[in-house]
Image: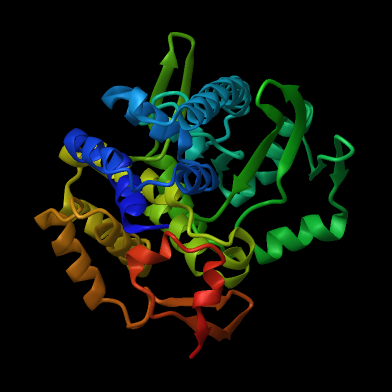
Length: 367
């Protein structure tokens, strides 16, 4: 991709997009729209690009780009609505069985900070205490979910065996995924992940999980449906920790091939929309109590390099404080094997440029 294409992508997804700059970049005729369309589709931001351009001047786009982004936006609306209906059902059953929970990531963001259609989710993420897994498993089973992998060629679910179910609890911070075939518009399956950790480790302190659950907040979807989200502070910690996991664990980097831009946007928009309600002193203390200094610094530093408007004095001050409390000077540049911590790779590529790399793993070398 050339610099004009990169500048267009960063500007169009900026929280406060500069309309004049977007028009100038497009009218320069230096944008190969095939490059841009492929990139925004792969990074799952096409629905957001459509929404932004629709508020500027959708007719500036080549027709195939307008058509594709519009179709993606509308399909994501259908997908989100179907998932929302499942979220309501699951929430009601968890409440009836007195199980404390919060919805995480896209399952809450799609229906709170993003306009319908601008974002989509692979699955529904739920945080519970580890002690609630069995009760929640039965609830999901009764709702038609089974723990397995979807075989799209056969349109069937291949169940996990007992060994796989047990290993997931021993090696990860979540259960094996639950899945139910939907075969509805824009959605083949409904997938649910039960998380009992804010990171990827299976022995995460459940007292901290209880703290998140006890501080949860109500989200009123409509008159008849209330679901629970984590507090603003806990959501920031979880989103940043999740981002770090997907950008630092070697097997995930190999699998995804890219650093997903939509995950950066989640944090960037969430903090911007909630900025006036954030007490950064409280956030700092929360980060320390959760031992998440490295994860939050990683996410904030990346965001400040990608988006030059993400550099308020409070954010810069927080980053400086966190950096002082991190022993790993190469945290921004290192990926590692979660099962063999001695196996590490590093990169010297500019942070902003990493977003535009395909097969980003090729840019990392042995220490």
